[in-house]
Every structure is written in C-alpha cells, then in structure tokens.
Image (cartoon, rainbow, N blue to C red; front, side):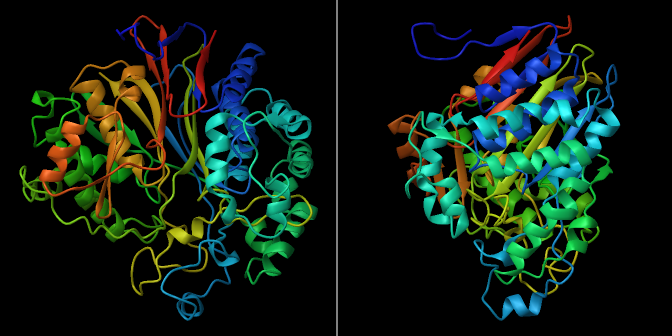
Length: 524
C-alpha cells in the first residue's frame, strides 16, 4: 500500500468494466461506451480514435496500430496487425542516393496508414454497436474541441519544428504550440471520421479522402498511389509468448518488437533480480546491459514477418543464456546499439476490460511527434513517418522495399497466470517499450508490486551510449552507475508511460495509470 503522506495515486477498483489510458476524456468515453451496451472492443476503438485529438502529437488516423485481445469469456489471446506498408513504388536505391537514412520528416518516410482498416475490421468482427456509435464521440470532440492537457502541451511545445507546410496551420496556434487549457479542434478530420462511419474503410482508403492523401503526398515527392491505399489490409496473426516469474507474457509478433521484450526477460532470468534493491544501482545496471544486448538483436533481425528468419533465435532460452553470459556485473559495456529507426517517444496505449471479461490491449501511433509533420491538404490527415523505421542497408531483412512493413517499436502486451488472463498492459515511450515491458513484469513478479505501484516506480533506459535515469533515482545511485562506466543523463521528459488492468481471481478489476501522462483509470 502506498504512503498516504506522499503524493501518489491509489489503484482504481471496479467490477463491471474498466479502461486505463493516457487522457481522462478517452477513459471516460470508453467507459460510457461500455455502459451504453458496447463491449471492450467498441470501447477501446472509441477511446483510441478520440486520443488522436486529445494527443495529436502522439497518434491519429494517419497512423498504425497493433492489438491483442481475448474473446468474451475466453482466455485465448488473439492478435491483429494494423500496421501499414511502404508504397509499391518505393525504391531503395533512389532513397540511398538521397542519404544514409530515410529522411523522417518527408513523404519518403510516410507508410500507408493501417489503423483505420484495423479499427473497421475489429469493429465488424468483434464489436457490438457499430462504427457510427464508436466514432461519434471522436467526431463530436474533433469539431467542438478539446482543452489541451498539461503533458500534451509540454510534448507539443517540444515538437513544433517537426511540423511543416499545412500541418503548421492546423496544429499550431498563432505559430506556437498551445498552452494548457487552450482548445484544439480538427474539423477536417471530423469529416473524415463521418465518411468512415458511413462507408466503413472505403470512406478512408477510397474516394475523396484517399485522393486528398495521395495528391498531398505526391506533391511532396511521394510515390503513393490510390491502389496503395485501396489495397491496405490488416492481418490476424498469432501472438508470441515468453514467461517470467510464474506469469506468461503474450506479445505481438513481428514486425513489432515484442520478441525483444521476451529476449530481455529471458536474459533477466539469469540474474537474481528479486534479491536486489529495486531502486538501486545493481538492478539498473543489469537491466541496462540486458537492454543493450536485446536491442542489438532487435536491430539485426526484426522486420516484416515475411522477411524475418530469426524469430525463433530471438525468443529461444539458449540465445538469452549466451547473451547474459556476456554481461559484467561490475562494468558497463559500450552502448553502441544502432537503431534501425530514428529515436522517438510518441505513442498512445489503451486497455479495456468489460463485464464479460473481454480484454483489449491496443497501441496506436504516428511514430515521431506529429509523425512526418505533414498533413493532407483538404482534410488535414496527419501522416505517420513509420517508414523511417526501415533501414537502407542492402540485404538487411528490414531494408525498405515495395509493400513491406517496417520494423515497429509499438507493442501491446497481456499477462496470463495459471492459464487465465491476468493483466492486459502496455508501456508507451518508443524504443523504451520492450525495456519497459521487462521492468513492469519484474516489478510485479520479483517485487510484488501492484499495477499502480509497478507503473509509478522509477525508470532508467540504456539508449545508445547514454543511460537515461529519471530524477526519482537518488544521487547516490546515479553516482554508482557512473562509476560502473555508464554515461548517466537525465531525460528531458519522464520515460514513457504505462497502463494496466489486473483481473483478480474473484473477478474484481484493479487498474493503474501512469502519472507521467495526463490520463487515468476509470471503472464502473
């Protein structure tokens, strides 16, 4: 139990249904959908789409999503890949002629948005109330406006230079980021959502909206075509699984980085984490070293599943054992872990559990802050720059190519205990997400923390040659880490964000929501 003398958050308990996400308006909307007869899938989609206006720097209908979910009354975990592909006309040689990496704020980096197709399919296959009802809250708030929250305003101010052209007019107010409490509206995107509500996926991937997106991208040098949009299709797939501390961890398979979280936890099994000071230097050091090795494997192997051949290698216990043996408990290894994708921190995550114990774990992003910084001319659809997640290295599994999906950093997760769904959860924060999954799971298992306490706990993250350490770590720990050879730095913002809902054996729901974000957990 937390110390009530200190600032903090209590866990949220409910019995009928629950949502945890990064903005209170989205959490409230999701629960209202449940109360009105929708199920967890309806509620998660409604909340996620709304978050594109609550947190437009993080996500939107021009982005991608990945989803893990369980059918009502079932413990079977299903997966859906809602990530888009590179346009059919993309040319790796032509991009190499422009530079060593794909320019992240250019039309070259814009992959076809996959989230809308995924939302339409999930609504049809697993929802109860239909797209018109699901999208109504987001349409209302896109038109009426949403007061900008504090963390959102802070992130927005750091990303204004990412915006260009028409997007600056749409997402800046008198040329500047909004301040907390200012109203943000997106009437053009509201019109797009009305088209989707009436026509389904065709309202986005065909007709006037698709023409606007294609024309806007081609005017900036993109190779995108109407066929690229019309041919977009999400895929049901099988989750991958690891285990740690008596819990089974379900992750989305590639092209997301869920395998990295499994590899990381498999390495942590070779250290007695539970015996360590949970907020001491020893644990932070071991996690940093494990992260470097796991992310190096990620950058070497993770790719479009049709092009990846090393998934079994990444998730095998033997691989983890060999890598863990490379770690020196007294010395930091070089941190040169090259990212196949540019660094970013922008994602939203939402989880919902309903009265029938259908669970949804959904993550949704435009990659960098405001994606490619490009908006379509007529409707203002903000494009992701997930294509920057490709590499230009010839022969690499993740080399950019026509119709390929890039390696993704966004990953939803779900935990089982004794064969029963125990906790859908997710960690935002770009590259941090796999490391964040590892820390969350070990917080819960090795240190017995509640979902809220596991989320509240201090974070550190080895990224390249730097060990980012939140201010909640003591100066003594920071000095000890530096003595081990880490380049200890304080990140500009808190590391990531997280949400989780635990299902107790008696059916009570217990949720936690990250104070690093503006959101909350809400139940009924």
